[in-house]
View 1 (cartoon, one colour):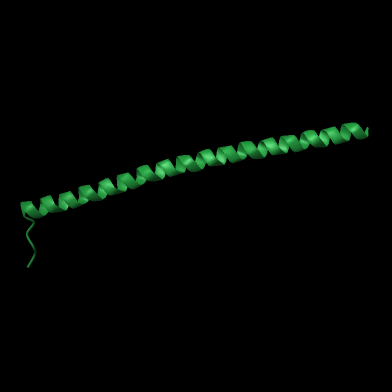
View 2: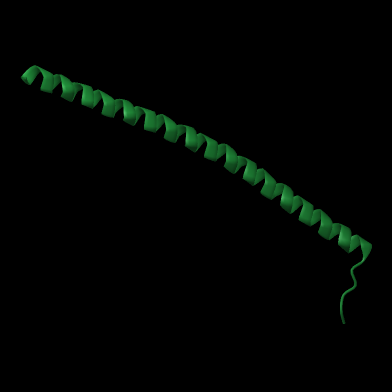
Length: 68
C-alpha cells in the first residue's frame, strides 16, 4: 500500500532539503576561501621563482661581462 504524503511529512522533507543545501553552501564558501588562499600562495611562489631566475641571469651576465 503506498504511503501518503501528509503536510507534516512534506514539511519535514522540506526542512531536511533546506538544511542539506545550507550545509553544501557553507562547504562551498569554505572551499572558495581555501582556493583563494592557494591562489595567493601560487602567485607568491611564481614571483619568488621569477626573481630568482632574473637574479641568476644577472649574475651570469656579470660573469660573462668580466670574462670578455
